[in-house]
Image (cartoon, rainbow, N blue to C red; front, top):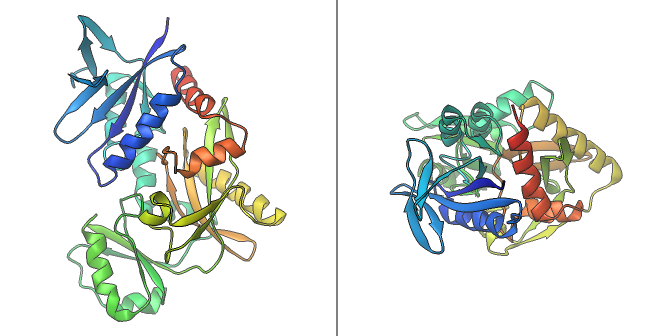
Length: 325
């Protein structure tokens, strides 16, 4: 009997539209001969299953819905929600309570990795190279001289809990720092300020595939803008070169570091992390545990280069989730 799969998409953050695109790509490529796939929109004002452009309300008591007199109960959830409540683990704790299996890491790992500061604190303990950082919470007294004495110029100002480069600014002059901080605070009440690392930027996926941890082919990022911002990621303002134009030793160091980060963070399912090379050594920037799956996104490019079709990539994630204890 075919399993019922809910592809959850949308969410409550600035990434809602990107998530809807990712979820639709999953829906298009999931093998319909193996699975009954349903698009489920998780939005602030409604939770609905979308079938033939008709909305059916989701019963939040058991995450089910009624379709033509049938009661549809899900065997597994494919998580395509970027940001809150999918990527930060919130909704996954709900599924755990309902004993519904899902394609992401456990909710604690998702919450940990969604928090950039906490992720950096963990990986630093395992001798992973990172940029110098400074933390500010909303309401703190801000001394620009103190900040820049630690991180220098240029620097990056980032929301602590956000994705798709929303709220990130590159600061090259002291007088622009406070404005950048305000932009970041519009996305989150905690921010992270990091020193600028001048080197080759790469993104690399690490996934569970056919019951093993697999490091995908890396992508080199050459942005037309100051950095890999929203326009560069989604509006074609960058070159994304897969595989990355890096040396054999750089590739070896990157793959071993990427796998180590995945394992020390105790992840499962999909991930994609960003690194900057200083010489031959990769410096970890951040990790995404619900990476973009749109036609413009990096993980599908990397999977293709690694010889994995989207049908097999998505199917393996569901198969692994269903087999989990």
